[in-house]
Amino acid sequence: MSTSTLARLRDANISWTLHITTLFASLYYLRLSDISTFLTIYSIITFLFDGEYLLAALQDPTEPPLIPHPYLPFLGHVIGMFWYGASYFSRVNEKMQYPIFTLQTMTAKTIGVIDPYLAAPIQRASKNLSFYGMILEVCKRLVGFDETTMKVIRWNLDGAHGAHEGLMDEGGSMVIAELSPGPSLNAMSTVQLDKFSEMLNDFVSGSDSVNISLMDFVKNIFTEANAYTIYGPQNPFAIHPELIQKFWDYEAGMIAVMADVFPSITARKPWAARKAINDALQEFVEREYYRTASPMIQKRVQINLRHGLTTKMTGRAELILLFGIIGNAVPTTFWFLANIFARPDLLENIREETSQAILCTNNPNSDSKEKTISVGDLKTKCPLLVSTYRETLRSIGNLASVRLVTGTHTVTAPGYRPYTLKKGAMVQIASGVIHSLPSVWGPDAAFFNPMRFISLTTNTEQFSSETNPNSTLAESERTATALPRGVPSAAFRTFGGGSVICPGRHFAQSEILGFVTLCVHMFDIVDRITGKAFDVPIRDNQRIPLSVMKPAKEPQVTIKRRTGEENAIWKLEL
Ligand code: HEM
Image (cartoon, rainbow, N blue to C red; front, top):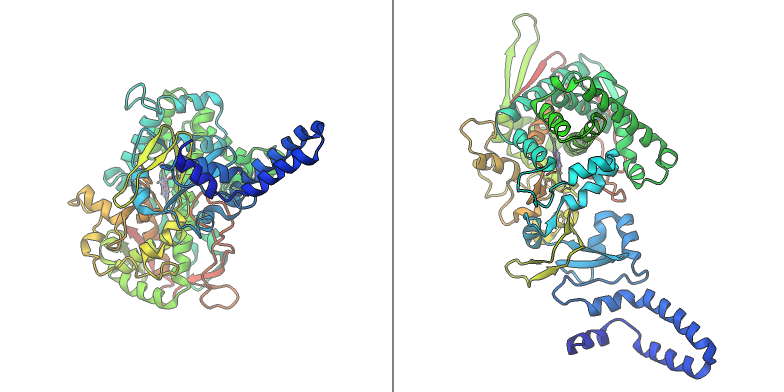
């Protein structure tokens, strides 16, 4: 044992004097026959209580430092993470303020990363850090894949049979290509924006009003519109409209279903809801309704079938994508609307700014006006709107980016010592913690600042449109990722980062900016009881996030057409 290890053992928070005294006392006072029983029990208790301190002292000093749990070794951090969600990482590290650290979670190691400069090299593609190694078990439980399907999905994840072989590579590359800026994305966005216009024009007209929970308003419209756009007119929600509610019943209880402890009894409602959706998705594949869906879904179903998935499992695979498409877009849109309508001044400023993106024409066949909002103009000419959207994303993005260490890996970043990550550890980049660091975002990091992303350095280039035929891919990328000067790119994490960044972020930006601007101009949305602006809801910090954060309580609102706009016909165009 090296002298430095001995020194660390000596300095560890372990009561060596007590242990040595107890040992000698037992030898002195106890009968020979009782000593071995006593020492066995004493060693177990001592190991349980001092075990993590011992592990910290014996740890390879190049690894991220281990933070022992003060009261409940091996289990304490697991309970803490369940209880506090991702915010546990900053709680546990409050005193030490390490940029990266290790927590002992049962027999495994979880590595928390709360520094964007270390997150950047970790999120880069590497054969030693696997995203799918972590996430596939979650997907399996999420939709109920069988083992045969998992074998097909897992095949060649390590690239041993060639860099571009296997279902995951083929399916993943196709989805990324379809959702990247270009004609396919524009076609999908156009259908989506048309559908929003149609639905919102019909939602409430004249002097009527609708009382509804703000979240349900967004859920109903987004689920129907996205399903139509991406899964076509014969999508499961169009054929079985009751599935819209069931989808969100499952979403609300999916952690309990995924825990898989007799879910048909312990999580009956979400379990039954998932079964109904899975059955409808199987029907969607078997009856070939997917042939009227977007090209992305047609190709996806065909790829899955060609790789040997049954029609049943091919249907289930779509439940994962449905979560990708609406699971985040719905709560994000909810927060974006809430952040604007709860602040009358901001609402007024955004109404004024976005009015330059509206083209008004008189309908020759009636006395109503037609008003068209250009989403391209929203992105290029409306920095306050775009900044409020990004600030909303910053304030609710809490999902940790996870990687499994599959081979010893050294993390290096300028100004930091190298850190060794050992095989088997699970890395979590704590997005929520990084999003609230004053060292990154400034002293007002804890507050909602709609102007934050309009820094002095923001230029018009930042708001360049991905729909502009002359724009390069690099420009389009800036549209969806621009940040204030001094903020490292790995600090804005709501869409993930590095090798796993959300391919749907461009689609999401168009649909969310368009939908929210339409609401801003068409409607007054006020508290149902007071008839005035409602309060910004509080975030539900206790819930374990599988998406962006949810509100602790959903505002109940009244939605009606704005005065003077009762009979206008609105349209969104790309
Ligand atoms: C505001 C809305 C959205 C947010 C905040 C969001 C966020 C994310 C995040 C954080 C990931 C990475 C997951 C991880 O690291 O565990 C992801 C992945 C993904 N997202 Fe999104 N997303 C949004 C909207 C969408 C939309 C609208 C689509 C599709 C049209 C989409 C499609 C996907 C897909 C296919 C993946 C998986 C990528 C992969 O496996 O490499 N997302 N999203």
